[in-house]
Length: 414
Image 1 (cartoon, helix red, strand yellow):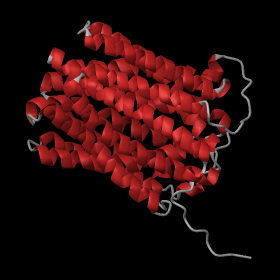
Image 2 (cartoon, helix red, strand yellow; image 1 turned 135 degrees about the vertical axis):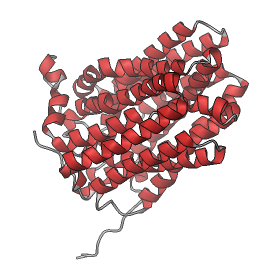
Image 3 (cartoon, helix red, strand yellow; image 1 turned 90 degrees about the horizontal axis):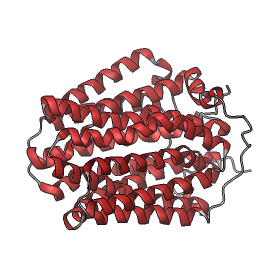
């Protein structure tokens, strides 16, 4: 009998055909959304010249998350997750086509905000189902490897998307929205070919109790609550990326192509870290590493806020992405492995409220502070706030601080 320790296989997830299909479709859709994000930010600032316009982009994307995330989580645990994701992608395709039409015709700015709101609505209705589908593709022991690879490839797309988006916007902003629509359609087609493991069916009737079940589960699980709270406040305060059009145009004077490279820098840092994490053995002190990574993110944000140099700004954005990737891998892995399958949709929805909405509201907060006090004050104060949040978490969430290996995570029994 072979008792030698099993070797770490960095490519374990890729040996599963359905994961490869799912991942390919998701990456096509992701690169489209990254390019569209570049286009909408640049176009809004070019047409209005107002920092607040960028904050309003964040608000339009946050409102559906705050209002619809919990119902979307219930839908993900009640109905066919694949079909929900496909309907969501279809809605995103139509809204991207709408943005392309408005951009081409130099249509009304308020109307573009309205279509952006519909786009975010379609996205949030499918997000919990998409997140909950991933564990149905592979054995539990392979899942951490899949999360790490997801993160790595997401960062590749996040490097390519803004860089490509910067060039696309120079040629044609409407083309960026059309690329996004095409990516969503490709994901729909590939999802029809993926086979998912069956899970226990949810038979609860719709009620306030079932809609709020995910929130109650997270509240009773102090580890998940601490994990989401840390990321929520860090993201809320660290919304510097929403102000990059201002830094690119007014502070660093590098134009739309420079803006694309600035947007690429965090993803480049995250990609480098993600590849490193893929080849390293599983983390032994995940909780400590999470806290250090968030603190590092805050420190790099502060330096970026003071920088007047394009290359120093690029370096600091690179570091924010590097640190953020550590946080993302730990959070996404724990979120899925600590949650029973029948609750994954609703818990993912709660996470969307905690982190997704705070991401977009962070853009609103950054835009408002920049409007009144300038972009540098907005970014630096956000970085300081992030470090303060880490210090509070160290004291208030000792279980998170002491959490060890990701492979030790087991589903929490409610």
